[in-house]
Image (cartoon, rainbow, N blue to C red; front, side, top):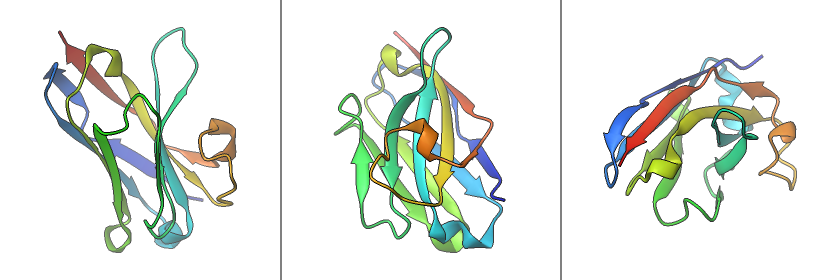
Length: 125
């Protein structure tokens, strides 16, 4: 079982940057596609970005494309989400998740097997 722990959330002004980390406990971490999702109260969980097991493929939601960058360091069992040009609409709890199958539906939270507890990102206007 993969345990995931997010860090790096916080409060930032609009236009600022934050870098989130997702650290995994499992040595087979490199076998998993990793996704970032976000959720605000009363709304469904929303796909943000995903990265393939080797880092060769990345996927982004249209709302973050060009502003967010996902990357991974398998030697450190860690995935990163660099968030630039943040907007108040980016305010949410951000969670990372691991997908052991790597099917076509990288943007569906149901495809992911393991989840972290989430980290709060708040962007003030």
